[in-house]
Image 1 (cartoon, helix red, strand yellow):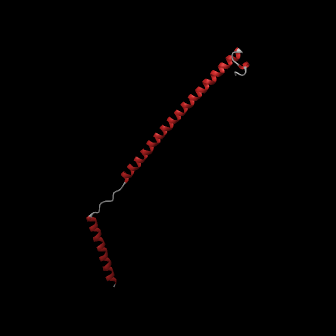
Image 2: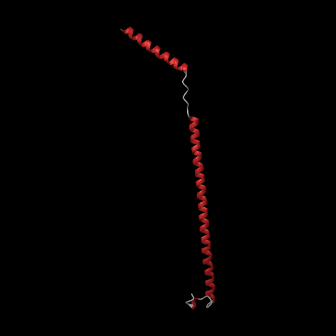
Image 3: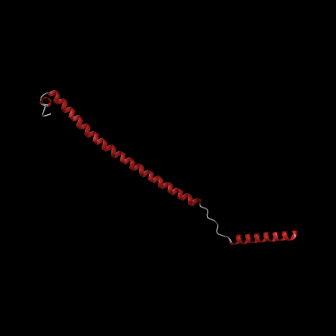
Length: 107
């Protein structure tokens, strides 16, 4: 602009006003744009942080629920009962005796 005196704002008052308004508008726009981008970046970052925290809590809750469900549904095998074992042994012995008697009858 200094090389071209005809473009100097002082030479023509209408151009000076237009130049000042254009300069102020572009400065405000660039400042507002930068501020908006910073604000938008901060908002997106904060949103992503809360989404991550929410997903982490949901995952942890699901894991705790699965563990609790598995513990609740786990069926412990009954401890070996000596009486039940003795009864089964007697039944097996009776079956062998019956089989032996059947074989002797057929012979």
